[in-house]
Image (cartoon, rainbow, N blue to C red; front, side, top):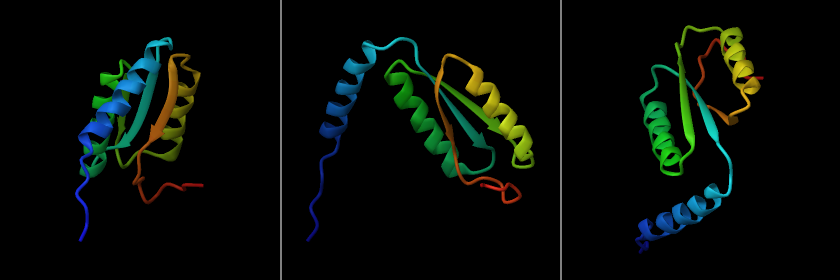
Length: 102
């Protein structure tokens, strides 16, 4: 029979450790690129935002339509890469089928 794990205490310990580490850092921003239309991705991005804000990390969610071109997405990513405040970029899947994911 499986064992039920109590994860709340583990999550709280991790959050406290990350919070202590975070206080030693300067300003941090995380960018999230999400294709509009996938509900699971939207829920996941919302959870990321909640975690980031709880650690005093700026969270920028950029939504693009599923009809957007790869060129548009790359342009957004390039702009984010030039932003000195952005320390990480998350590109959420699934991506539109007409995009080449190479």
